[in-house]
Image 1 (cartoon, helix red, strand yellow):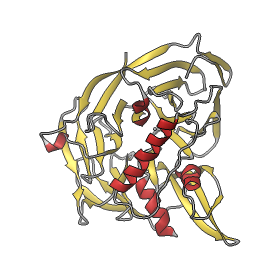
Image 2 (tube, rainbow, N blue to C red; image 1 turned 30 degrees about the vertical axis):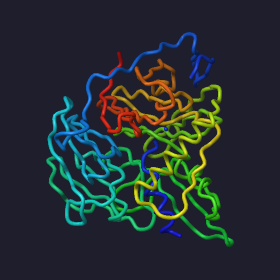
Image 3 (cartoon, rainbow, N blue to C red; image 1 turned 60 degrees about the vertical axis):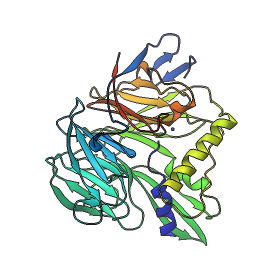
Image 4 (cartoon, rainbow, N blue to C red; image 1 turned 180 degrees about the vertical axis):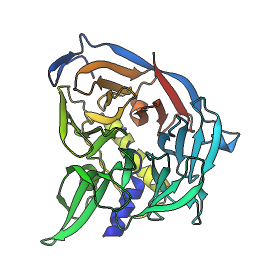
Length: 375
């Protein structure tokens, strides 16, 4: 049973897929008639189709920054983290394919720790492995048995936020316990739990598992201890803020209209994720059935001013509601030049060093990392 759970985790690695209604945040009125819409524009890009291999991406799985602001890109097929300056100049490559020291087989996530080390999660090798800021390989920092952590983001010190599924059998049922929590490198047990759920799963239909665990929640965190968790729900737009130790700080709720997917969109989404599973070498049944409606919230990020950026899953063009730490709506922002259903496959990463974006399914067939700024 555990191996089957691992199979699903290996294929769901990037999660990553508005309007003018009146909406309310905690204590403020935030309406489409008076909110300012700003544009995120491309100021530079990294990546080429052919040429220098240090600029050719196989598949971007995660993006982060060094403590000095250099860009870190986890390339899954290359089993490497590539470091670039903020101007896009190649600095170094950490890791390569293999099972020896400093080599990886299935790197699925990455986080830069408070002391500057870069931690890479490899599910096939069963743990987190770290490099020093200068690229020197250190070794395994945390061994993971059974279900691995996924989708890690930074937190205070050398801790991080991630999601994990715990499994148990109760009354002849297989019970899944998905958790979003804060973790350290001493134990797989969470230091803080921000959200968890329990539901049974019968192995006959994996869609409830994917929706109830892997796609259930999205979150954002920063190195000062801010944590925001939101449901990836087609019915509600609710964000809950926490301190690093789990004390609730703010709740943000917006009232926006649900958006139903077209049959073409549903088919395209199902085809994309099933094809992605096949391309990753998965074997066994996989027949993911998307929701009929789009998620209200797609993803979130926290910028250098500790503003929360909440991406609306209802919009094809990546569109954000931006709030301060008290939950007050500040403005909206959308990525210029992206339209159509292809925009649903864009990932936009917001952190203390800036905003970057890339497409999971680029129209021209190769990935580039785009550096964005508010116009």
